[in-house]
Image (cartoon, rainbow, N blue to C red; front, side):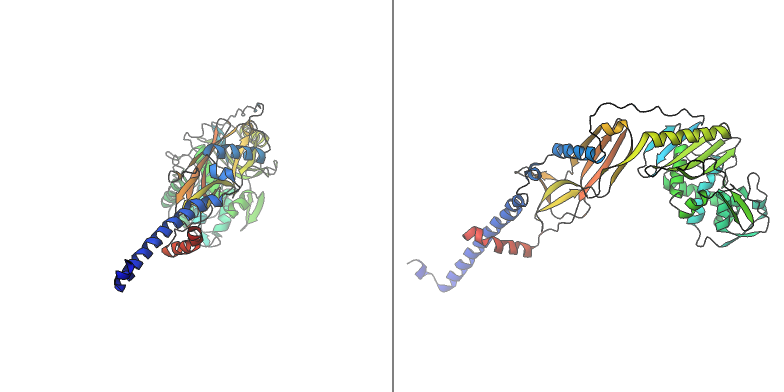
Length: 441
């Protein structure tokens, strides 16, 4: 026989070569089974997962959203109430939870803002002090600052905490200067800090020349910018505490809130007024009716009475016409992806936070979605989306656009629910062993 004529050493080499060839073939079969056949098995019994298209995802989510907000998309038309006519030259209402603009009038044009300036004064002060109860010595310049006052005396010592109350309740210009000198070293340097903070908040059409807001060339903001600043200040517990206080006596100073809406309308949780000859009557106030949380800004009202009327009109319009909805809840499954060469065969794509929006009544009836998978995803021969390992937790696997009515559009990232590590040689060896029965059985 031929084999009997082959030297033993060569037989060993031939056997080794054959073994290598067998291992390679088994490896190839193993890889096929575990990446394609295995991925199919993962989706057994859920044909929508295997064959789901982007259009399928859109239809499913539109139905889900309609169910979540208690409305049938495409229902009969609903007529919204007309926005109110205001005397204010500039105005805005910004939803605090969704950042949607619910009302605007000349909201992006520059104007003086009087003592609503002091919202930024407060914000810069609390973010740049280590101890709110540290002692401040009132300078002569601060004590004799003109305009509204908390009645500080030259040389008086008082805590920063109490100055902040006098700043926001009595709208004390003397308190504003005392704070600026204490925190910034000088009024000029404190204004630099104010402008830096405005820039960080995206209030790009704002410039501060003083901490109090008296008329001065180059001191201006917009209704939109002021809403951004106020929204940031509202995150501070002390700010919310002060602006919701009606009266208080601190360090011998009787302080009274100047907000004419506070206490008369339960949805108004606080605010800050302002007035100068150049700015007119101004107010920033906060709305919370248990559903909507918003900040409203009125600049340039002709009279105090007009400011109140405008404030009430906006309050009624927002609470009557809008409602906040959770369109999609956190963790909602949006899509499935098979993963090639990964330790797991697939990964879910989800929405990783609640998708909330404040809508008009009419906007509930017209909800449309558009979904686009990541450009890194390919379609396998079997028709399901396919990613290459590794996949990291929170990787963006797609983008969902939600259009409500004609003016509200949301962009939502669809992300990986978990991580999928790339297979190692050890993993492949295990697969090889596990697939031997398929090859030789």
